[in-house]
Every structure is written in C-alpha cells, then in structure tokens.
Amino acid sequence: MITEKNPCSCPPTSVSAIIGHKPSARPATALGRGAVTILSSSTTTSAEDKSLFPYFQPIVGAASGTIIGYEALARQNDDQGRVISAGELFCSPDISVDQLIAWDRKVRRLALQQFKLSNCSGYLTINISAAWVDLITDFNALPTVLMLDELNIDRSRVIIEITESKGDLDKLVEIATVYRKHGLKIAIDDFGAGFSQLERVMAIQPDIIKLDMQLFQNAAKGGIASDIVHLISRLAKRTGCRIVCEGVETEADFHFGLSCGAQYMQGYLFSPATAEFKEPLYYQQQINTLRKSFLSKTLAREKHKIQFIANIKNLIELLKKALETDFNLNKLSAHPFEASGVLRFYLCNNEGEQISSNFNFADANWYEDTSQRGFNWAWRPYFYQLLALEAEKDSYRLVTSERYRDFNTDILCKTLSLRLDDQRILLIDVAAEWL
Image (cartoon, rainbow, N blue to C red; front, side, top):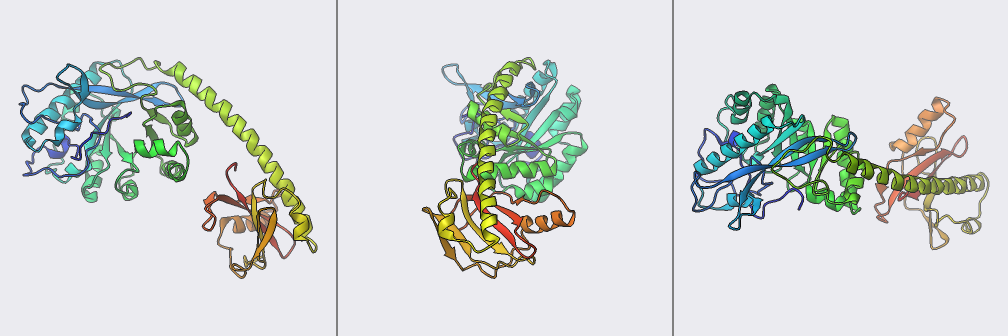
C-alpha cells in the first residue's frame, strides 16, 4: 500500500485531540494512517522502553515537478530491526491513554524538530482524528501550536489533516477555526472513504482535500469511481481547494490524477516514507517524463475525439436535412449512426415540450418510443443555453450537455441541441465515451 492503512479497526489519535482529558475508554472506530498523530504503544512495553520515530513521505507538485511537502508517519523497529508502521500498536486494548499521549507527543516533537532542521522549504502535514476532537477541553492550549511556537516553526508551513472518521461536526468546525487563526492550513484526509465528507467540506471549507487511496486507485481503472473522483475535482475547483491524490503507484495512476486536475501526488511511484528529507528537485526529471508521456497519450486520444466529433457532426447535418421534410427512417438507418455513437433523437418546440417520439437507433434499425412525448425539457441547460445563444445572435448554435449516465441503458451520454427551424429544436443523445 502506498500510504499505509493500519490493519486494525481502532481510531488514530493525536495529542491535540486528547491532551487535558483522560477518557475511560477509547472509541472503536476505524484506524487511519500510521501518521505522527497516530501514535501507538505495545501491550507490555513502557513509554520509556519503546522507540518510536517519524518517517516522511514526499508530496510532489504536478506542475513544478518539485517536492512541495511531506506527510509525517510514525514508525518503529520490529524484532528483526526492520522499520515498520507503528499504527497497529494502537489497537491493543491494554494500552493506557496516558501512554498513547506520551508516544504521540514524542513522535510529533521529533517530526517537528527534524522538519525545523531540514532544508525542506515546503509543508509538513500532520494527521488528527475527528473521533478524538470530541475529547478536547481547551482550544486555547493546543499542543501542536505550543510546539510550533517553542521550535519557532512558521505555522503557515504546517497542515493539519482531519482524517475521515465519526466526530462532532460543530467541534471539528471550531478546532479548524482555531487552527486557522493560528495560521495553519486544514486538509480533509481520506475523502471518499467510510463516512460521507460532503457535509464536512461545506462546514470546514478545507484548503486541501486528500482523496482516499482506495477510491483513487479504483477510479484510475474507470467506471463509477472515476466519475466520482472527477466530480470531487470539480467540487474542489469551485471551493478553491487543492487536490492531493494518495496511492499513486503507477504511471497510469499519475496520468489519471492529471486528468482529474490534481495539483499534488503522493505514493510509491515516487517514494515510501523515509527517514530523510530529499532535495526539492529530486523527482523533477521523473515528473517531467511522466508529464510528457501524459501529453503524448492525451494528444492521441484527443485526435480520436476530434475525428469522432466530426463524424457525429456529419451525421447530424444529414439528420437535420432529412427532418426538414418528411423523412424515411429505414433510409436513414443505412448510414453509420450506431457506429458513430448516435443513440436517439427527438424534437421539441420552443417552450421545451417534446413534440415527437424518441427515435432510438440499435442493431442497424430505428425504433420509435412514444413514452416521453409531451415531456418538457426547458429546464435542461442544453435547451435554455441554445435559446440564450440565439438571443445573443451567436453564430455557433450547437450546444452540448454535461456527461451523464442514461437511466435506461446505463450508457454514458451527452445530449446535443440545435435549431431545426423556427418552431422546432432537434435534440440528439450520443454515447460520450470520446466526448
């Protein structure tokens, strides 16, 4: 896995979430990443005996090709001396909260100290579990802020990642407000995993959204997950958020991230978490090569798209001419409508009322469907946008809808609209694989 998800079902914790409060039991929600805020303990080892330390995974900028920051992750040595994630230790039911707090403080401080001494000019991200925010009693003495002041670290270079978990939304908004007042940025981590985060995005208005690794990797393969990630990307653009794609393991993952408009990438394609900070330009050549291969593949796909659109336009002109007089459906079926992705057409009047049947094309034949005759589509953007263009005397009057999945056929579609004559508007549904 790229950004390790711990194999147990306990929540991550952070000093800033639990300091000053000693709960009798820890909540049993899902454990997130083994980050500096996800500090753990063993069932038999004291805080003095256990050695935990931070590692740092680089986050790269797609445009600059530079390392723009790091995520701090807690690590330990196993019995063979190998470095492993410290996250799973937090699952032990025998660990006291005091011990967890001691380890959390230790690793967090070490991470901040190393960040201070490094030549890194970017950001450091630190996780905080939403489940533990409910336990905060004093927002005026957040340990992370106190450590930043003690170490004289520029607060604007630290990002607090709120991991996806259950938690009181009002308290999340309150703590996000406090962190922002102290100059820290806010990220929502693992967006798209587990619980819905849309309400949190609206309430917290994060600076950064980090896509859930599993969602991103599934999306890179296509299908509904891809549609969801593109939708999230559009949401981020409208709200001014930056997108970070986690779990970038392959060239295809990187290319998909670019196609979604993600500014930042994180994953094993570049590096796992390591003990040292790297030079900012360490991955620049690799990223330049990845961008070039993306451009080459995208250009080939766009050329195919242009040819696809040209074929559709030719068929639309043919259909338009046929509809200006009486038309013969059987004669029209001789043309490659189906091969070009044309699914159906229908006619509306100027008020948006459908005045014809749906004429569906399949298996080299046209089929008439009268079920939607009399429906009104004036509220659809592809209809009123066409009328608006005509009102402004725009010479280009072919309007296309957003992509959508057809309810009856489950095919990804677009609807095209154009003026047929003074009284009628022609609407054509086409397969949108290449649009």
